[in-house]
Length: 455
Ligand code: 5AD
Ligand code: SF4
Image (tube, rainbow, N blue to C red; front, side, top):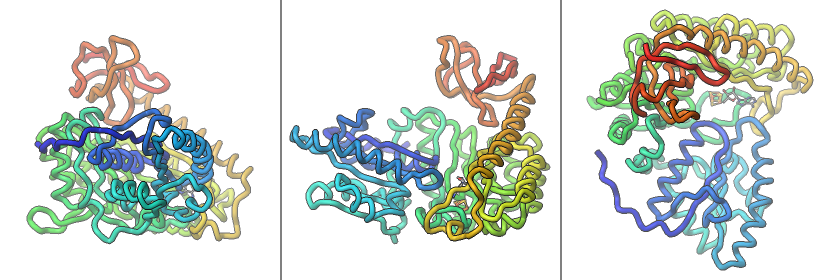
């Protein structure tokens, strides 16, 4: 177990607002960890904070605009607080910070610091410098390994987070899909060292965590040297994590088809604790569009991977991401997207209208699809995906499944847990305690959860 460090008495408060993906949520907790060691307590009341951080996402919506409108409101708050003699420091972090950097400082004078996702370990220093020396920008890609500076998740914080936890093992992306800003905002693919991952996993289970989700923009691109000095990939890392006593469930998100190697597919067949759920986005079904997206695989190569995973783990649920209206997408291309969705049969899939991201090749393409067509295609796709998801949930009725109990339910006599396929499952409180895995039979499928009873 890890030593509890003696923390300075919390005398300052930090408020963090988070947009975007799980990676960003995880980064926010890591910023909190780093700041807590510097004497900051967390607050849910922005008006009472000494430090306000907006952890931004740049991937789809008009995120930058949202940040500016939030900053407008915060500016007024900052002014009021300056009059009380307890100043407020304002920071913008995350992918918008990385992409817009100086522009943010220029447009919004209330901002004291802008920090990109690669340098959170320097946050306490940057905040201190902003207080004494004025506005600070740090959007360098850190030459040092960012992971080396990450404080490990500490027991007290883990307990507050419950029986499931995220563990970042990889960051960044070298794939350069032509619609996506991630390679520009998050930088190149970096893997966290094996020993550090194992150490953090151990401290998580010591603190009561039973299910660990490995995180990375391209989590299955993870590679590193194992304890014997031999190069290994994600499949082998999963075996090592599965060997830690107390690790009951493993998941990983999010993956690229190109990195779905034989070892990882085999792990799905061999490791019971690797949950039968795979998020493997394909984005489109037409080979022409996949090529224009620079996805580096065809539709049939994707379906082949899905077939191989299902062969070793027949109960696996597949989830994905789809984009409609990428530049040049014809009706026929869109039908190919509907076809690949039918062929894959998703348990869950996110779908988006293509949105132009400045600085990406897609934004320069001349054959943009009109908004009305995107809207129509998205509605048709969503309709199909909703049917597939409903059919998947329906197929669970009558099954005997293991549920990891996570939290109290809405009713006093209920607990809520997760199925192997990430569905919320409501059970009777008498069945066990939070943190237990119980075997139950699914009896009904409610809109947002399954209801189960003792076997
Ligand atoms: N437009 C629409 N969707 C996008 N995504 C990423 N960039 C864009 C964009 N420019 C989607 C992809 C990705 C998910 C996280 O967000 O489907 O897998
Ligand atoms: Fe973006 Fe493609 Fe990298 Fe995923 S793989 S983060 S979609 S560039």
